[in-house]
Image 1 (cartoon, rainbow, N blue to C red):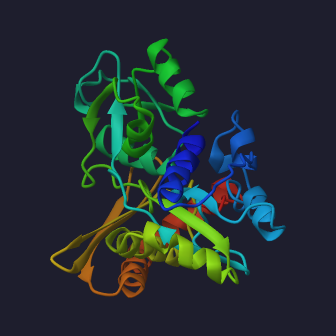
Image 2: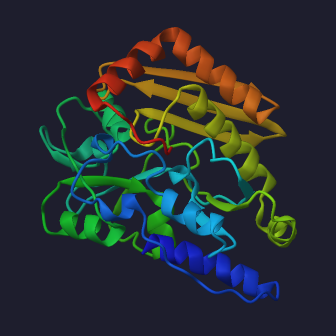
Length: 300
């Protein structure tokens, strides 16, 4: 549903520019596996492979992705031609009965399938009981409404795009809940040799969003992380400078490493913060996580 909204949004922008657009909806492995936590699914690029196959075969000319689902290194022959203007990258707390995470009673049941969110929640409230939560946005919100959870954590961007913010009680500050790399932005992927398409899509690229998300993805890449590794990355452009916060955490929240630095070059800054986190003990945390989950999917 969210993927369809995103595709229609980009379609509308292209039509405004005078282009004729035909939509093709492609189901990916990640869309089909809804009964298993992502950390247990060892498929690299599980939200992108089928789409890239269609691109390579010429069945489609461009692909619209949630940037946080896109692997930090694209396969040969593909190019990330544009990163759209980012909407709110924060995570949000949704609940029927409680106004904020702090108001949850001891032992409350919180839904998320993200180790990144779980680790940061547990660091703040070790008493909370974290339960897996998969499915599309509607399914997740319905489970909350039906009383399966006292609260759930989702990305603000998806809820805003779908107009499903009724149960949002708290926008979580990045200092408390560091978002996923690329959260809130869309990535437009094309065939690397498609010069014409590159020219047509240039208007979709937002320079500040690109700088911030490239920085976050460089950090993620340095840490070798994917979507279900407890890594957060949040960059902002302020007064022409990039400010990057990165975290690596143990899934149980017992240890959260946080590093903040300022720089000019997105890739250099991302790699520097990633390297610093590894040196401070992030390497041992990630080794333990990889060991527990065997193969970790490679999308941020």
